[in-house]
Image (cartoon, rainbow, N blue to C red; front, side, top):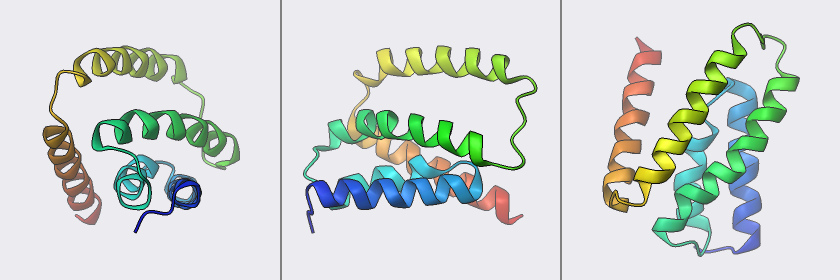
Length: 115
């Protein structure tokens, strides 16, 4: 079921809600929803989700009552380095492997939070 621009809005709304409620995880919702609800190709879903999730994270940071800016610069430096590395290597990794890696991370995170 492809919904075009409405699909992007629905996916963004769901990702924002998850990110706002849990403080993270919006991207895990966003990637599958973009693939399901939009006409984006598999190799476009990951870059689009990164572009969408950055503003969502910034907004969630300012509205989260438990947000702490202590040590923020260390996280930002590491995240920037990781983002650059992933951006350079991501073009060389088959989309199927990226989907599988995301699935493993989602399962690992879910199990970690349940236990």
